[in-house]
Length: 69
Length: 132
Image (cartoon, rainbow over all chains, first blue to last red; front, side):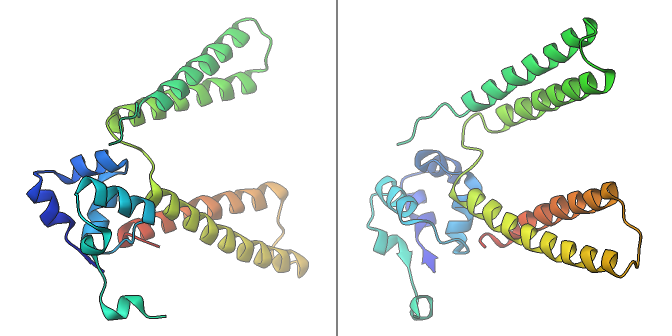
């Protein structure tokens, strides 16, 4: 899974710390989400999408292999 | 979006630590408790004060726990439980075949060590990976 969180953060001039505080998680969690190593809960993904004013589908980009059943 | 007072929880445990510490000192001074029990109270109070103070400073602006830390802690606890079960199984057969003479204190000490170290090890391992 890839994300465009970093680009959106830069667009709104937010640091990882700022975003973490706004959505109520630790900075490390934002780091892992940005790296694509942690899949956040739907609730956290929604909070991030609200802060970054972008749809969840546009923020979290899944490749074909990520969604195999 | 979120505006919480993150240090409130640590302030409460800091106050709780001070109460335990003072209780330990007071009961020792009044000779109500045995020396070993009062030293346990004083030690617990001191540890609570130190840990709460450090965490209050470290996490004053943000949460100490979130969904990732909870997920990692839960999975590490599950792994730790499993390894403790294996160690218990081994201890049982060692005792059954009288390979080593084990005392109750010895078994409890082994279990303490296994539980604590496997928990710490898996927490660090998952934290390094970024997910479980």
